[in-house]
Image (cartoon, rainbow, N blue to C red; front, side):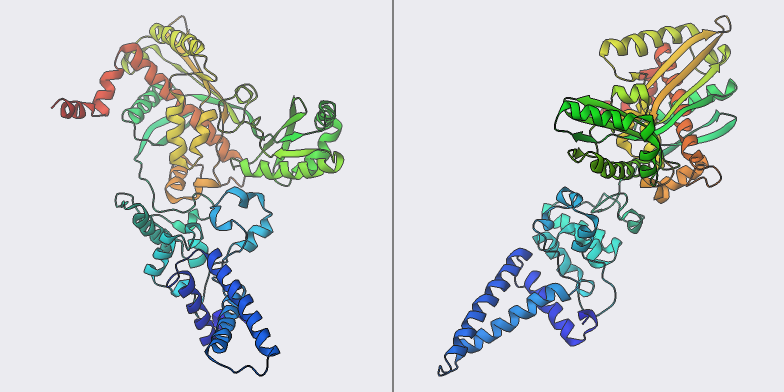
Length: 540
């Protein structure tokens, strides 16, 4: 029987359960469940003794025993019949959205998570906001379950926000709430939302790249950044534009496995890298992407297998991870003594500056170049070709080498990459490897003009999935003409976005180096950061 449609009985059960969990007994669910079980056992024992002693007169105690028995049975049945019943897996209330839940099979996790409630007849949807906020604040109702229990993502975020205020004693009035599609981020972008953060978006350009003009959206709180990139775009356009070359497109994931011995690990390495086995492993993998390569590294009896594949217009981390899991399942049949330690063993390498990404690339590998005319260097950039070349050698090349840089042979590539990533819905943490860049400058045409290039081996971007579904980020992608999937040429939008990132970095490098060479850096920041008003205020 569906309690939600069971009329008065369903309402009684729902009311009784709310009274136990939210109202009269604001206790954790494991305690109320335990009390109900103890009551059921004790009352059952007492009823058995009563039945064996038929001459025993009935009194108040016997009546109380019957009431306890019925109440316990009704409550425990509600855990299975009522849609508000919580999952009873040990520790599930405390694991949030990660932890051990991710290690469980998907079917078990789905069964443990309550389904969204719809319809009528009692339950949390009919509970008033005050009841729900009190339950979240007391810990009786886990915050991360609000969306599934209420079936209303906006209401869940609003009530979570109020519960947060009560628990911390601090308001979040300055954090915007209206204007966000909370349904769109569910299960994709952010868990347990209470609002969103505002970031100004500036537009630099037009950037003339590969014969097209792009107006580049940049989300940043650093004054002078958009203005600087805009000046670089102007210098590039005035010199005929920049061109780009995409060298490689390959997202990677590298699981870590352990074998009984180093010799056995070497056997698995040879099997995985053997050309004769590639088609077989690719057939297992290719449901989630197109496998390109498998390269392995050994550390004792631990083996790291770096899978690389093409992921179309998606950035592709989830796609390649699913493909890798399929291959690992197959390999365990061939090597039953293989112990999978982790689907990611850091040889990928994700969100870390590593030599493997710098040398072999990850995501999109792009080179972008331009020849800046000598008169543009003087009129727009306010410096000379000779000074720019000398500065780049001493700062970006020698200075970075002295610092022991890994892929950091540039002036501020990360600045532009991060601003573009946030504006277009990319993973901001992946700016770590995406910003690996070497900037090269040299004199050409008898020293009259400047050749500038940026080489970026691991730009990790996508135009579908992740934050690209949000309205603001989708609008920025649309501004660049790369929103969504390219159905005519799958993967073309993500590739073009990677070249736009490299072209924007080229403009940013050119302008900042010119500001340093001419001695205008501090003056520009004082102008655009409005630092003078803070300095004056501090002095007073």
